[in-house]
Length: 210
Image (tube, rainbow, N blue to C red; front, side, top):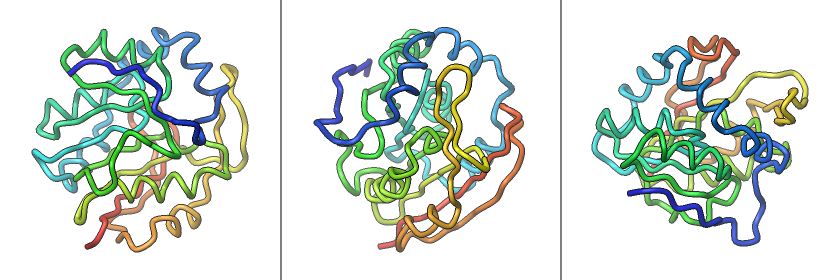
């Protein structure tokens, strides 16, 4: 348990640099915002419906660790991964005893193929450059074991933009995402307003078949 801040990108592609820099510039503020939002009950309901209890779980793009801590506390032993060292430090401060590590889509070099039963990637892929989204989705499927479940969501947008903090919000093409899932079977797909953030979110649940 603890925080591993060693960078695991190993020379590969990384999350959008300006987005990571924005999070590193004020991690305490972002963490406070996320931890004081209403609980993401729609996420919790879907996790309980589809994830495998007691099996290895990853929270990809864990931020300040709110969802990682919830997963672990509710029977889904999780490791949180994020490229922002500032957010990981804040995660460790807020959630001692939870395992947090530095790694990034699209490569996720520190995670072995077929090693996880559950993968949560909540509102992360829109922070990627559009060219990296398909390969990132494919990598998320690859780290699942047969029968493993991927929870993947993104903010719905018509165009790419940066917010006032410099964070990238790419327009994610639903059909591109579905195609990048390969042979994984879609078990759930829906768009709704998040009760936590108030943003329009598209969520896909997919199972890696044997």
